[in-house]
Image 1: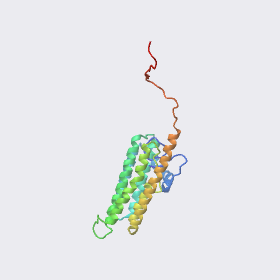
Image 2: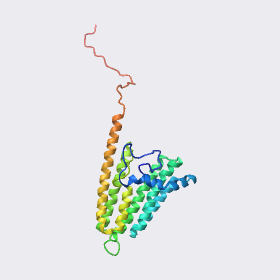
Image 3: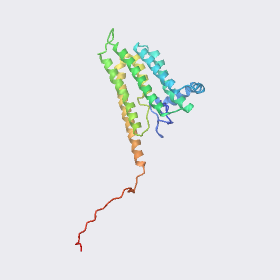
Image 4: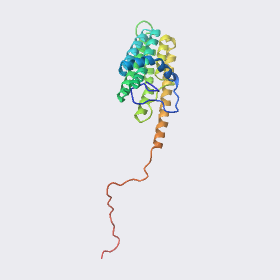
Amino acid sequence: MNTYVTSHTTSTSTTPQGARATGLYALKPWFTRRLTVIVNAAVARRVSPDAFTAAGVVAAGAAGVAVAFGCWPLAAVFMVLRLAGANLDGAVARARGVSRPWGFVVNEIGDRTADLLAFGGLAVWAAQQRGPGLHWLSWPVLQVLVAALAATLPTFASLAAAGAGATRRNGGPLGKTERCLFVVLATAFPVIMPFLLGQLVNGSLITTVLRLRAAHRELKAQRASEPIADVVSITTPVTVPLQLTGAVA
């Protein structure tokens, strides 16, 4: 659900012309080509794009469970499946010609739910880093919660800009793909979890600023290109009072 559209909308691209995809998101065209066989099979069997959105959320939930148990190889596999589901829903919708505005809503809800499930698993894993049992009131858990909150900011910025008429931007420097990678790395190397989460927060803030700045430029350019009416039509009669300054005979 990114630069070449991953939602089931009628749009064909979420990257403005002339813009270049950044971060791991630039690998999306390559990843999409790897999924061509699945797309063709789904089209032949008339599989709903929403099925892939749901599959991506389920995969994210499985990844969250794997993260909670510290099983990073399994978490990595499910994260890839989560990204595949996020990619396939839009690809299948376009291939079948069934893109629709509601697909954008389904796509966004699926993505946000998948993020919450992944960070939820990481919070459980972080709570185990201070000894036996679950230590919820610990610094690692707090860091995960702050990182999860910061990770929502780029999406909020993109959706707010899209609501104003700008392009729905995706990608990095720290987008969805990078978030999945950071979660897996924090699971595999808990000793550097604080550093990774700090970078996730910084990257999310930078990404938010970059998306807002790009959206501001785009909206400003749109406004500048709008035609300005030089003549104002008066559709209602206007009564002008007549003042008599001389004597009346």
